[in-house]
Length: 432
Image (cartoon, rainbow, N blue to C red; front, side, top):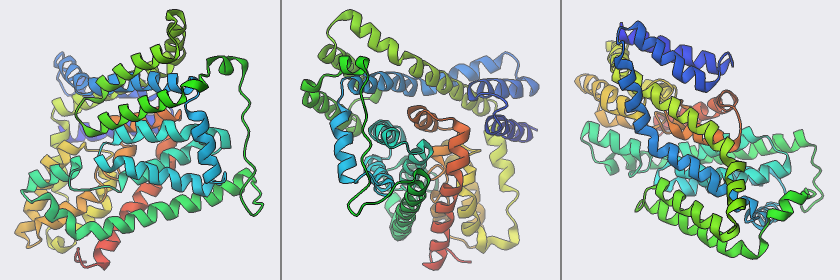
């Protein structure tokens, strides 16, 4: 019964968000609470909500101060010369801008943190997209693809798969290194093709060297806030903050809190101006912080009530016993959509061991099941899953609706998983 209730809750959530019948904030709060109450958990539902909120509290804090920090340095004009330089190098061509976005996201996501990747990539590239009047869904889609095709040995999902099946991470990774390369070729090819399509949509005319560069006229308010003399101090502050954060030596929320204070005193030492700068960015920070807290409540309820575990156990029974050899291929194909239903812990520690155990009994090596799962489950799937705070971070930073991002990006992310799964078959990693 819990499995059915959990599945209905997840499906209802997606339908309400995708059809825009309810805002993500309202749906993330209403649906799981209703499901828990209908399942008879009563006042214990409040405990699940609190635990879920506690689990995302550091991400919420990081997001709030990240929005304020990047807002301050952007007001001060730090990104102006960087954007101009990027446009010069890319010659204002959407194809190069999208491929550059993919490369930036890929390099930053080498540490395996989706939140850090989006916190750096989106604020850096968003002004370029806005100045070029490019579709911001392209920004979130390409960044999601580049971050998603990443299952290096030190990433969270790889570590979970390794621990769950007691197989060294490098042993799982080495055979699929070439597959990841094929996935990245797909990402950059897709970015190029999307760029060509965007060039046609914008009606840009190529003059042999590049497209005419868009010029941005600053308003009187923007000119008053600019601090061109402080470009290098602001850049040094930002790079230092990113470096320490990526190193993992200090929690991101702490670094952004410190960085925000330094940025305020560096650029706007007057207390009244500091208040105005905080007020200017508080609305965006508060809106997305509330959605992140609601997402924490959702995951807290479906985990605490046991709905996730029940769905995991029920899903295993749908594997046809007579088609064991096809298990890795089948798991690979559905691994990305499974990210929309299961969080990484419930899948890798709940479902994966059961599937791998059943496969092993039917003479299918467990390592193949692990590799299949890694092709999409919370890799290409995490940037569109409502179960990961990074998804809300991505759309919040870009300023687009979650439903718009999901409808646009899911086909490309799923295609990346399919390409890599087929590559595993062609390379002899999976039987068929």
